[in-house]
Length: 137
Image 1 (cartoon, rainbow, N blue to C red):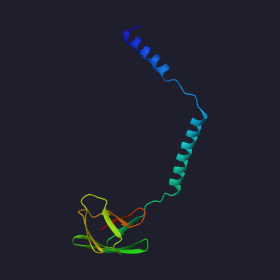
Image 2 (tube, helix red, strand yellow):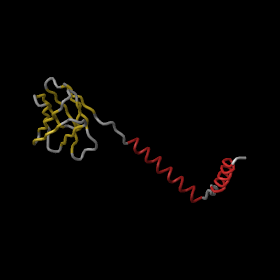
Image 3 (spheres, helix red, strand yellow):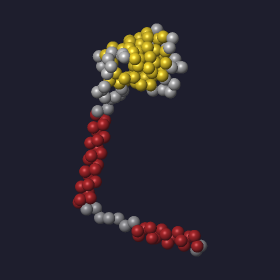
Image 4 (cartoon, rainbow, N blue to C red):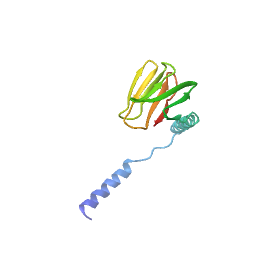
């Protein structure tokens, strides 16, 4: 045998004996069953409570209106981009893309973008998740 194969055999033999299996006690079995139960319940809970985020398309010809959670929005295409009127100050607007400039003044959001198609997220205070609105010229 060569030096390398002898060392490999010694290392493998030592490794095999170092990794002895432990006996499965009732306490350890109970712990495994409890953890699996928690994982299964968490998976089922998340699956039941899952909801697809709403997506709205707004075709500006030159304006469009849409409703989210009984709140009416209207968007108008202007020379600076898109002017979006918000129904109350509880709503926030954030951009999903780079190069999107949003300026909010009271209940009006001025959205400027280089592209003709862009998306923003609208979120109401206290509302779970946000709504994605796609603007297209």
